[in-house]
Image (tube, rainbow over all chains, first blue to last red; front, side):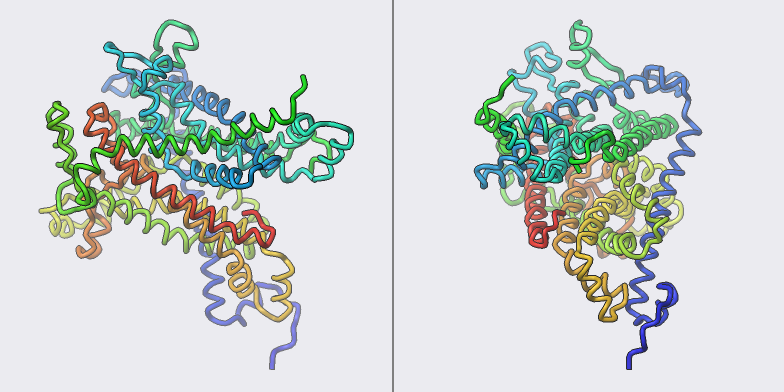
Amino acid sequence: MPAPWRPTSPAGSIESWPLADRIGFRLAWAAGVSLCLVAGSIVVYMAVQGLQYLDLGLLFESPQADLDQSKSGGYLDPLVGTVVLTILGTLLAVPLGVATAIWLSEYARPAWLARAVESGVEVVAGTPTIVLAIFGLLVFQRELFSFLSFTAQGDAVFGRSFFIAGTMMSLIALPLVVGATREALQAVPGHVREASYALGKTKAATIRRVLLPAARPGIGTGAALGMGRIAGDTAIVIILLGASLKLDEAGSAPILGDLKGTGSTLTSYVYVNSPAGEGNAPEKAYAAAFVLLLIVIALNYSIDRIAKGRGLPAWTR
Amino acid sequence: MRFSDARVERALAAAACLVLLLIAAMIVFVFAKAWPSFAHNGLSWFGGGNDVDRQLEDIINGPANPDAYIYEIGVFPLLWGTALTTAGAVIIGMTFSLFAAIFIVEFAPPRLNRVLEPVVRLLAAVPSVIYGLIGVLVLVPFVLDHLTSPERKESVAFVVQLTGASLLVAVVILTVMIVPIMIAIIVDALRAVPRSWQEGASALGVNRWRVMWTICVRTARPAIVAAAVLATARALGEAIMLSMVSGSKGFAPNPFDGLTFLLEPTRPLAATIVEYQESSNLEPVANTLYAFAAILLISSMALSLGGYMAKQPMRKYGVRP
């Protein structure tokens, strides 16, 4: 006969569960707690090592090629490289991603094409960045794109520059922007669109004046997620940004020259300075990795702030 | 400024179709470049029983005359390394993240949950090079000092050197990398299970674990499959971290070596591309590397489409995972 139900605390009643259920319950707790422990130990370890070796002076010093670690300089150039590449990639990914998301959620005609695009975005999201990187190399080493990078004597196009790395980086951010924007657009209630049509607005005007403003937090979230991924990617940087630690400009044009030139980012700096790379200066790698981690955490935190969408009218939610 | 409706639709559709164009270009370009390597080797391209690093060196040092290019390679050790690291990480990670997701959704005290969710997001956002750095500076020395006894080194000394950088470290770190992705997807799916179904089960006297296990996990099965598939795609393509911690040797770890198997070095396909890309201005090397990329591209595409399909059944519950 089943025991009559008593309001007990959930923790107290577990002893009465069948053995298999108790094991499962304990395993779930163990998994959750060890997740916290792993995350905590990674963050604490990186913070301890990073703060130990972080030298604020090195943030403003260019790296130098030198075996003596006290002379090999800081990570100003990689830091600038990360910022430039992230901005470049995001600037390319956001317009394209938002346009794709609007088409997918507002038009999506013909249906087969919409399905194809939808799964295409998933495919791009799943493509390894190393494959994107060497695909980029293949494309941008053609004569046609010689204006985007160094050109060696004999007209061989180098195919590595900030422009090129940024273009391929935008593909990493694209699926995230599309996903977040679509979600935001789908969260806008249908009657809002109908209200706009009732006022005689065209679909295009509705998208521009009503839907895009309402989707702004979503777009921001997607962009921030994408920036985090771009800042954290290494494979594309190593292959498409050239292997120069310093920013090497191509040509004399002030900003274009830099963007056409090669450089490094924090991720490639960490890679090169790890025991796996040529530099083998773990202290510098730890410090740069810590700076990188701070950037990523800041971007993550900004997602929370953006996603709340303050200052938007109530009908958008 | 006024936009004509039809023109806006066409412009947006064109932007959306760029993605398809890109994928088509990717397949065409990569396969065209990879073709000589496949064509010269035939099916023995997938073969083993050789020193793949030596073969790559031969390709690099081969003659410069296009008619005499060397292409001979058997990539089985690299494929085996890819399969072992990926499968190991996905199987361990899957089990772990299923329990962790159940914990987050059902059992975690609310206060812990407020910490856990940002933690999962943070772990997913940590760049792979940082995981690699921790692996190569912390785990590799640990494995070398505490798990690799001289007898073990001796036992395989005539085939391979044990340096600590090993399959074990690669799998452990890869697991840590993919677990947050899987947890995020599974948690979303478990949360999306209608509350009334769970309440119905509870009203029948089913305990909380059983409700989760038999109602929620079962409903979320498509999302769990999708999570595994997406995590596999991620693990397959991880290059930088694996080139840092896996030992960087084109060696196929031998399961018959007992536990030493876990300590043997390996090197997956993606990591091989990173390590040999500096020689990619030589045509035969480039062909070989693009052949590796073609394999990765095809498998990741199959996995992404598989994940996309696997998620579809959830939609019939009105859930968008």
